[in-house]
Length: 402
Length: 63
Image 1 (cartoon, one colour):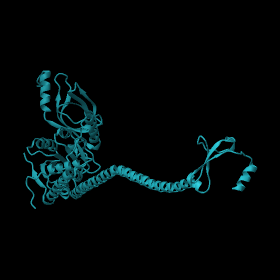
Image 2: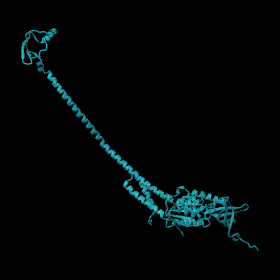
Image 3: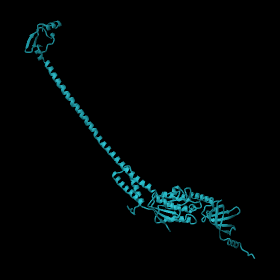
């Protein structure tokens, strides 16, 4: 006989029968988040559909309608609604399409949150002394990194934190490695996260929100070198510096030794040049000072020279003047000798004067009977005017007489 | 030549950069400049020696 059950008992029994985990593959549709806490979606194939339920806390993988997923969960009939649904514990994306979509969704979300903002990128120290490396110790990525590092630089200490770079443990180990390196007593100057290339599925850990947040939260600057040149991961975007490959990460993290050394030599040359330049400058300064001093003397010297010339001019002028004065005196003396009236008297001339002693120059100055005095070269004769004549004829006659 | 274990590459390099910076001034005192140059040359020698002698070390960080 079939036992009679209450609804609650019935549902309890059914739930008991279907208890256990199921892994179901299907496509997501009607995806929605309710009250910022609950996730509802349908999982379907071409013939059937099942309602799914999850908490946002439990399911961090970004989902969207049309994604192909593999859902791990348990089935249950809800007591209050009588609805049959699958409570989802884990969702795994299936196929490149879904992965790509999830990748883009997460990228968009984290971009909005500012995790990839260029302004929060930090400067990597030019020459690190201690480098933290998160990698698989058996990977080619680590091998390449170590080889290039040794080729380029010396004297650096590498703190290697070995992790699984793919598989279930990858995300938690990488996150833990960031925590450990940040808390380590021997502080690293930089953390390098590396792994070789692979499919989107292989790189899943480096596209996970947890790893991205671990990079974002690292107090030590991070260089990320994941995959090949063309691969990009969300870890790359969150890192302070993105390296295209693990080898490239080594190239970024340390300078090239030979280049560094030649730069050192160049630096010294530059300093020598600076000193030489300064010497030239000082020399030029001295020359200029000397020139200035010489200039100070130039003007007074010129003035003195001019004074001397002037003095010479005056002396020669005076000398010339004296000679001409001497000549003048000599000729004057001769002239005076010639014009001395006494000398003239000696030649036979005489001077006639009236009674007042005035020299008589014209005959009409005198009247008949006037006394006059005639001075000769030797002695004086007193005489009286007996006749007067002033005509030219008479003068001539007189001259003839004389 | 052995490298002093206390030699700090980063510090010495920073000191060298300071010397170079000092020379960037317009007017450098010649006497002090020669002293600074000698200081810089010694630093360069030490840095080069360090790079010539040292090896890179790996230490695995375990929990």
